[in-house]
Amino acid sequence: MAEYRARALTLHPDKCGPQYGKQFYRLQRAKEILLDHERRRDYDRWRTSGLSITYRRWTHLKRNGTLHGSMHWMSSSSSNKIPALLDSADHSETSNQATQAEREEHFQFQYSEADTDSSMLKQFRSYQI
Image (tube, rainbow, N blue to C red):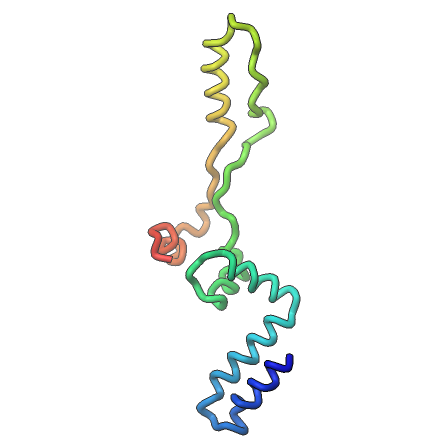
């Protein structure tokens, strides 16, 4: 907090001139984010996300609900669980084929099509960000 006070004194627009207003605003905003526990947690998540978008854009996407883990592996139902492998040699070939088919059904790639027209998602999918 002492660092903030010292920096605020050197950037305050009333003391140093209006040209420092933008820098002072950024300093104020940084202080507010870092002192609020929830916003600080979000800031830390943004820093570790690896996305090359601004924090402001990241929070905007998060607020609108478009920033989430929209692609993940999941099981469609509990009936698609992979069965234990049979020990008998008689069923080895047919059970291997059945087990492979069940494995392929077990893992299904799910994604949300609600925001496929988003320009941000298009940039992400084309490795631009």
